Length: 300
Image 1 (tube, one colour):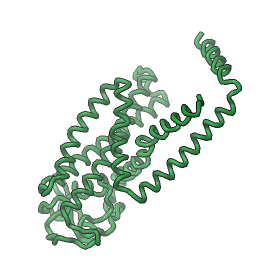
Image 2 (tube, one colour; image 1 turned 90 degrees about the horizontal axis):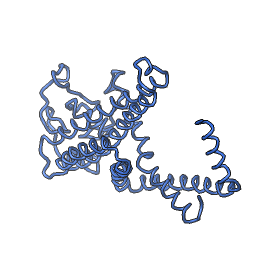
Image 3 (cartoon, rainbow, N blue to C red; image 1 turned 135 degrees about the vertical axis):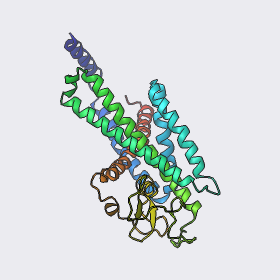
Image 4 (tube, helix red, strand yellow; image 1 turned 60 degrees about the vertical axis):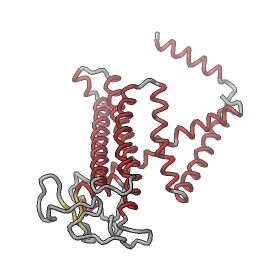
């Protein structure tokens, strides 16, 4: 019965669009041209005005999913979005204060590093559930395929979305705090003297020697011989996307810093989030622009 109804519906749609091949070709051409032009415009915008591009992209990332989930009444997502927004707004407020409190950088990086790890674990869990469902392992636990797939895709979406959004907010806070702390200037020369036992990210003393094993966190020494708290330098490099020393701006070798192969996927995951930013922030806007063009031209 279902197959018969599907064939009837398919035949009805085919009859409705019969003879519209030229119109469909025109719509496809508009879509391709718009995507190419939009990509070129975004690339040029990012290269010429990176600050405004990042700010608008961050706003898009924050608002566009909110619009669709509110329209679809996805209250679970709206709840997590509200909690994330409140905490991140407080963290961002602390990061933009002048003078900057000595405990703020560490608080900022610990929050975003925690958020990054949670999103990473959530995304991996969602991907695992999806793969298990495709291989039929869900049937062992008597879980319907559609329920298991919905659960896996939801986890994957939560992990990727909050991972991208968290990294963007972290980068914004990192840029502002770097200029507020004032360890380096536009010319690349440090404007303040850094003691050997002070972390350049948070400004707090280094209590654990580089050669010692810390109870809570270890101490990292970069190739430029500057030392940092583990949470601070991890947050600076992975979450804040800064691959240079906070004090002297020397290039940071991430492979040398994260010699453990189990830690390197965090870096690759961060790169994946950067690739997905375009799809979440700008793709809905571009598709909406294409639909507007089609509507003006009278194309369906």
